[in-house]
Figure 1 (cartoon, rainbow, N blue to C red):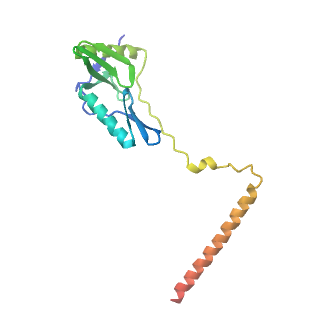
Figure 2 (cartoon, rainbow, N blue to C red; figure 1 turned 90 degrees about the vertical axis):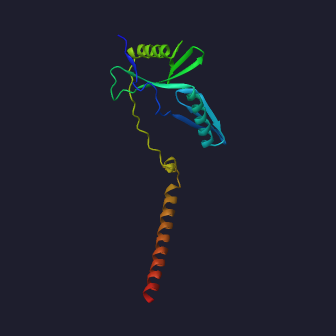
Length: 190
C-alpha cells in the first residue's frame, strides 16, 4: 500500500520560515547555514552580517525556485507536512528536494512530473517510516558558578577558610550595624 502524498491546495507556499544555524568559527568570523539546504551557507565578519548574507542568498535562490507543501492523505494535526523546493535546473529539467530530508529528491522534465516523482518517493519512504513532531524541552542552562561548587571540599584548609569568611562577615555586619546606628542618631538630633 502506497502512502498518498498530496500537494497542499495553495500549491505554492508564500508564508514559511527556514531554520538557520549561526556559528562563530574564528575570532570575528561567523558562518550561517540553512538547515535542509546545506548548499545555502554564508559567512560574515559579524553575526548580523552572516545573517544578512544568508538571507540574501536564500532570497536569490527562492526567486528562481518554488516551495510546495507535501501532506499525507490522512493528514493529522500532530503529523507535520513536508516542504519541498522545486527548481528548474536546465531548460526542461526540474529537480525537487524535501527540505531536511536531502536523500528524498527527484528529477523530472516538467514541474508536474517532478512533483509526481517526489510525491511517489516520499510516499514510498513513508510506507516504512512515520512523520512525527518532536517536542524537545530545552535544558535550563547551568548557573555559571555551579562549576566551582564543591571544588575545595577535600582541601585540608577548607574549614579554616570557611571560619575566616564567617568571622569577616560578622565583623562587616557589626560595622554596618554601627554605621546605621550612627545615621539614625544623627537623624534624631536634627
